[in-house]
Image (cartoon, one colour):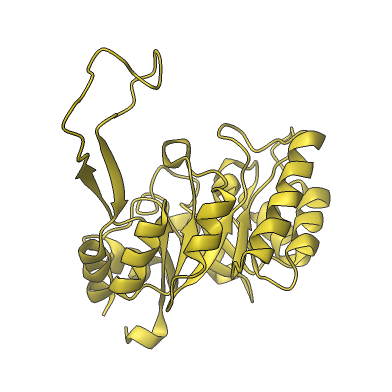
Length: 248
């Protein structure tokens, strides 16, 4: 494909990662915190600073916690306020997703979020992959006015989910279906070929060692849950470039 025929979205966990994505030539980022949980709402400061990075669009994920996508009235109020703040901070788009107890898309709250996001485009994220019926859900997203769907095809990776992703692309109409989860330079061309998609979501992250010289191995900030204290991950411009080149 020619570079003008596809778009690359990078899942960015910091302003540093947004800059790396821009350097690599990505079209936009999905700005997140809480990557081990699958992405949660970033801080106001992170959103505001990320939106100052030139040459790349910043879509902001709105997800108040990890876990399921069934939200209480209090959580919904938080999400609507976070959408307002993201818009004021200069976000180019909003990313979120919500389900009912029975696994259907929560259409009523989805419509509230789309209305709150307007005029920014709204992407329904991988909450879709936890829904009861993908084609029923797709119809709801289309009629509610979603601009884009991020999905792994209801599998643990987009490569495993190419069959469903292809069917979703075929049925999508104006809605953009964007494969995501596990994409890299080694498989992105195959996923593009097998699904017919034109937009792709990847992280392209690498491990970065802490610069701390003094380290206390006796204490874990995660308590009983082990969290890497002296390393972090950030978007790697070389990995992103390699994925772009693979598609070309």
